[in-house]
Image 1: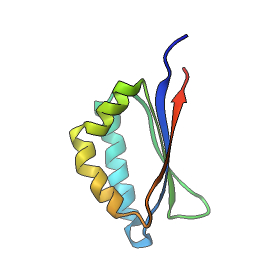
Image 2: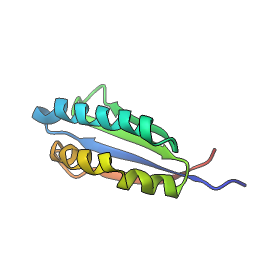
Image 3: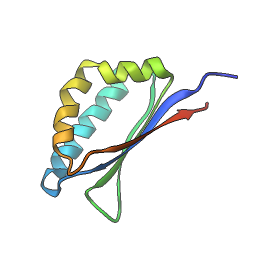
Image 4: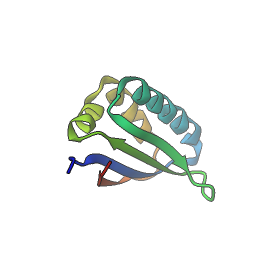
Length: 100
């Protein structure tokens, strides 16, 4: 049996006046993840159809090491603090194993 990947689902609620900034920052983060993290298999931002300030970030990494790389890569450290400043409340995050 292969080792599981590392995934998370984050629930994020933005301040209405910061929604566009949040989307721009997350879009930049997603592009950099795609370009520079080959072991990040999924990195997706989803917005609720019913609540424009409610978002979900879904990510899957090859393994724990790939997740650790993501958490410490230079652009993560640059983009995540301003992303958090756009939030109305603390994000909720759930970590999961993913089986390929």
